[in-house]
Each structure stands twice: as C-alpha cells, then as structure tokens.
Length: 339
Ligand SMILES: Cc1ncc(C[n+]2csc(CCOP(=O)(O)OP(=O)(O)O)c2C)c(N)n1
Image (cartoon, rainbow, N blue to C red; front, side, top):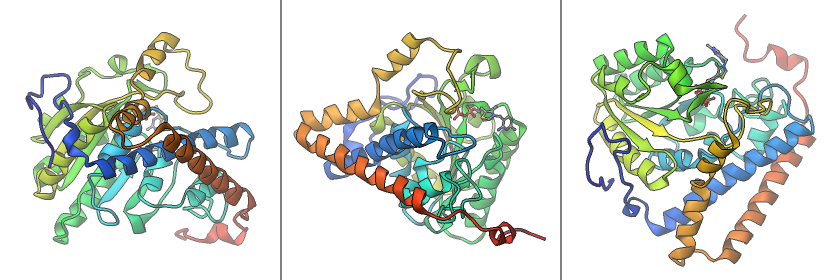
C-alpha cells in the first residue's frame, strides 16, 4: 500500500510527497529497466520514422516514463485492463508485448499487434489486457467504461486504467463517461496525463478549469493531483486508487507531466520555448531514478551502461524483425472486417 505523506488535501498542487518506501529495491531496478526500454524504444522509432520506415503519425512518449512505470506496475498483470489514446507504443511493451510485434505494427507488417493494419495509433494486445491505442481524442473513454462495466457485471475484480490526455478533458465523452462511472460506481481509474499541451494548444487556453482533477469531484469520484515526473509519487497515488477502484470506488488522478519531444514526429514545437523544455528536462524521471539507484548502491554506472547497451540491441532487433517481416496481403484486407 502507498505511504501517503502529509496530506490528501486535493487543493495542494502535489497531494503525494512520494515516499520511496512504496517501491521495494529489486522492483525499482526492474522498473528503471522498463523505463529505459520505453525511452530507447521511442528513440529507435524516431530513427525509423526519419528513415521513412514508419509512415503516418508517430507520437512518442519520451519524458512521461514515470507515469508508465508508476501506473502500470500497480496493476495485476494479464488481468486488469489498460486503454489509452494514440501515444501508445510503450504501454503494451511494459505489459509484456514483444517490442518486435510493436515495431512491426508501426512498420505496417503482418507480424504487428494488429496485423499491420492499425499502425502507430492502434496497437492492441487483449491477451495481456492492453485494449488499445485509439486515435480519436477522448474516444477511448466511453470504451473504458464498457470494460469497467463488464468487469463489474461479471463479478470479476478487474480494474480498468484509462489514460486520458489533457486535450480530451473538454470533450463531451469525458464528462458523460465520468458521470456513468460515478453513478454505477465502476472499478476504474481515470488518469489524466496533463503534459501541458494538446498539440500546440496550452492547457489554460482549452480548459476553463486548469486544475483538471477537479472534474472528478463533480461526479463523486475521488480525485487527486500528483507530480507526474516523480515515479514514487505516481506509484503511491496509483496504489491507493487501484485498491479503492477494486472495491467499486471510481478514481481519478491528474498527473502533471511533460513530453520532451513534439506532439508527433511532424511537430517543430514553435508554441513553447527551449528554456521551458530545458527546465522540465532537469526533472527527467530516468535521471532521477538512475541517480537514486547509484546513490543507494543498487546499480553502478557500469551496470547502467550495460543495461543501455542491452536495451539498444533489443530495440535494434525489434526494428530488424519489423523490417524483415512481410506486409499484409490483399486477402488480409478482408480479415477482421464486418461485412
Ligand atoms: C476528436 C478529435 N479531434 C481532434 C483530433 C486531432 N488531435 C490529435 S491529437 C490532439 C491533441 C490531444 O492532446 P492531448 O489529449 O492532451 O494528448 P497528448 O497528445 O498531449 O498526449 C488533437 C486535437 C483528433 N484526433 N480527434
């Protein structure tokens, strides 16, 4: 269970101070490796996109890895449901989907998670509980309600984690879905990943209530903000939220975070200053967790170098696998289609 420090006063900008005790040492090393894998995988995607191996849209998760590890590690593997929008490469990898299958999907190959017909925004691995990346802003939220309702209806104690961008909060489906979750007391955790921008639109331009967690309170959903650059804080908040959701109490977390790269590979980032990006990079979650592991003697710099080497090789192998995989055939066009 989480160690909640100080206060749960929802008005404080960061409700959880993030006690280090929420993550045991051996798990922390594992989570650091998963965060490194997410970062290096996305960097490999950027390279493949530049080489025109990946077509269409490509949204990278770089900078937000404390959310990935803090949220997903609080769930039951191969049991709980996870659903997100289009920034979706790293969640299935964290949940056990092979990086090769994810990269193959990005390359549009038959060996991809959606047979090469979904691409970057439509990864899918239901066997592991990953119920998809979805391209329509806010479109995943009513679908998440369906999973949470099904779990409750079938008397299964599965929790649904629904990732939501700050840009999806003004969308009607967000409010309708929270209302239903509040009425039916669904086992769901909504996580608003507030990375400050929806494409080039800053939070305060598109949201009348910039404290996004407050929307949950309107629907009788326990809600709190958390420092999304702090792995321990995210995990502490999520441990509590998951325990409550499994008891039939819907939950909402607003995680304040930042994406270091553009909205997508095609974004030149004219809407924010270099200084602002640099400021957030000072709080790079990989640096913070890495420094802590070194300081505690849980890893050495040699260990970290070796890990990086290993992971780079894993990502290069994923790209080779994608590159050498066949494209879908003409006949595949008619598979998985309702006629
Ligand atoms: C209904 C709808 N409107 C517009 C778009 C175009 N669009 C794609 S991403 C995006 C911004 C969403 O930002 P946010 O929800 O904050 O997520 P982030 O990209 O920051 O992860 C928009 C407007 C869309 N995909 N769907």
